[in-house]
Image (cartoon, rainbow, N blue to C red):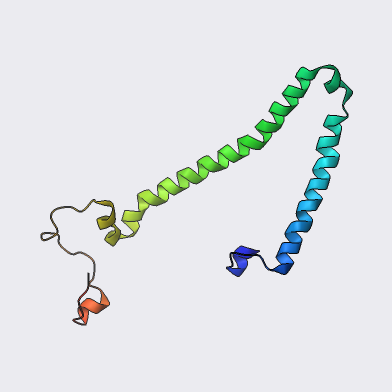
Length: 121
């Protein structure tokens, strides 16, 4: 909701909704995940099963996080690679100017200030 409003902080209504959703999720996790694991007789008799359950829970949590992180890293790399192609003036920022500054032929139109005689890049 904050993205739709272009704000960094939630308002009072959004804050209340976030807290209520957090409490509801905590209740559901306690009821359907935590309590069954704590009261399971098979896990008490064989502690190694408890380790397996813990490892499965970690895998269920970490696999999506790692996959999303990898996708975001690839997206960032593509955006950075395309930055100079999408912004010709940005080439000077990453050190890939061809030739010296004096012999560099200008291919983009002059800035508005330059055309008015006010100087420019």
